[in-house]
Image (cartoon, rainbow, N blue to C red; front, side, top):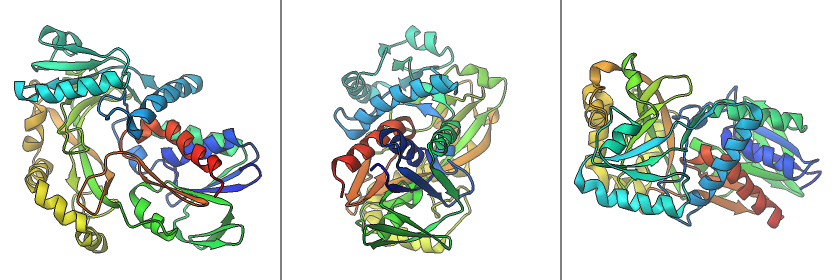
Length: 400
């Protein structure tokens, strides 16, 4: 790839990590990042809990498991090198009833197979030793799970790209990609850019931009809004690190949880509510074209038929703070509806297959000179530097 021009669509943390990796691996390669917003990390990168995951949840051998372990290590080193925030405040994954213990056992097996550092199982006094105000019958304690600021990391990745001679062009929404002799021509906001290779890291718009380069229709991106509550002082002091429920293995969501942020605050969330717009951060935002696109995808009806009860419960939690906190308060009884206030929201780019399966692992498609990151859910931010290695390895192994 040396002396080539590589275009990157999307200046989220994954796109910027890929651009940075290219400049490191292939000095002399010109990297051009095209971003439709006015700054980096505006969407999923800037609307998450800031958690650096340790690898508890992912099936051993999956791409998620492998890239999370590698990415966590790389990210920790990078943050230390650049004096970026990185605090290993630890996480408890708590079973609050005996019926959840088989699922906790499964997570325990996954975590140990994935080499989660320092993992231990605790009960009773062991739980309150870690989190004095938490309750449960058993828990997994991951002391090395950390928190950071992913937008600051993305900004630093961007500075690395520019320092290596690359460019980040804002306000460039990609509307067409045309193959031409020797490369590709990208049309974005009235401008044209010729590149030798293209990497699409478009997040919420991964399927739309993927179709511009003749990628498959599957999986389709279905947006889910994740809403947060912020714990008011002094109740925020009741949480030292992170307190998570045991997730339901039928869903790729981790459930509403308590997370300490690097700014010192504590948030509760996110939930997972179907959104009516790709960037539906507000509850009342409805995009009729997007709604039609969602309901016309065969997987949507199949998903709804299987999980409509869960969807209704999530919607109730979205409308009522009391309903939202009902489940969360089982883990920290001292924090109730009166102790929180509504905070921001994010939108998860959830990939959905035609058969109604919620895609849980990373998916990267190769189309000759084009690479499309079609699904990069959590822990994509944790794994961003390892995802970049994975993508660039594929690009260099097959020159397309």
